[in-house]
Image 1 (tube, rainbow, N blue to C red):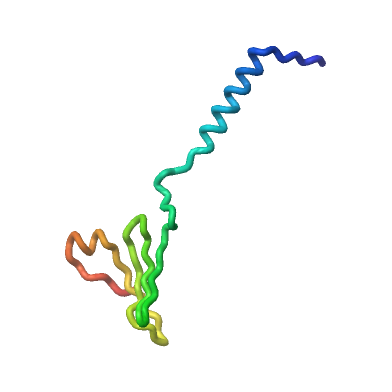
Image 2 (image 1 turned 180 degrees about the vertical axis):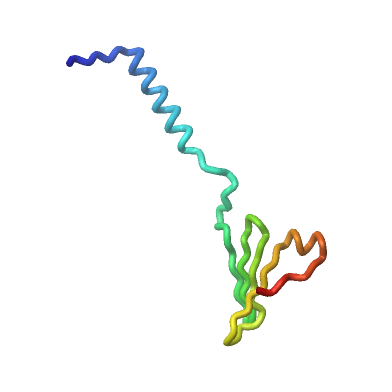
Length: 86
């Protein structure tokens, strides 16, 4: 079986390969460069924040029994409700 490749077919193949490489090389621009989750640790507090949604969990007093409090910046700010303990 003899395969012949003409110039037109080579150019079309190269163009499709270039287009495909260009399409898959783009990244999603919504990704945060510093990461999605951020933590803050103080003397008696631990806070973990989800930077995409605004949700957070925190432990206010470090003791033998772990008690975490969940919250969301958007819902807490808009309706004025307190955070709920889990």
